Length: 84
Image 1 (cartoon, rainbow, N blue to C red):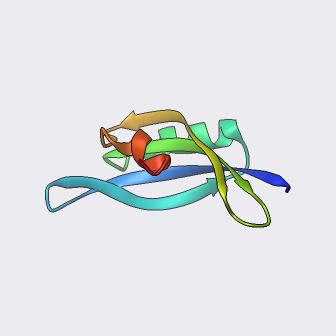
Image 2 (image 1 turned 30 degrees about the vertical axis):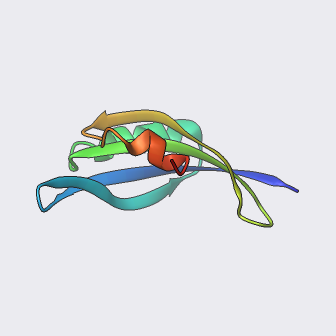
C-alpha cells in the first residue's frame, strides 16, 4: 500500500449566481500549489491549494487538506473534501 501525495489548485467559478468548483490544476510542490492558487485568484472568484494523499494502487483517499485559499471559497468546501 504505497501512498502518493498530490498537490493541486481548485478554482471556483460563479454559475447561476452560485459559487461552484471549476477546473483543477496539478502543481509539483506544496509551495508551487500555493503560489499558483494565489496567482490564479487574480482571474477567478476564488481558488484553493490542496494536498491530496491517496493509495497509489487503489486510489482510496487517505486525506485531503486545504493548504491555502484565496478569494471566495464555498463555506462547505472543507467538508466536501472528506465526503461529508
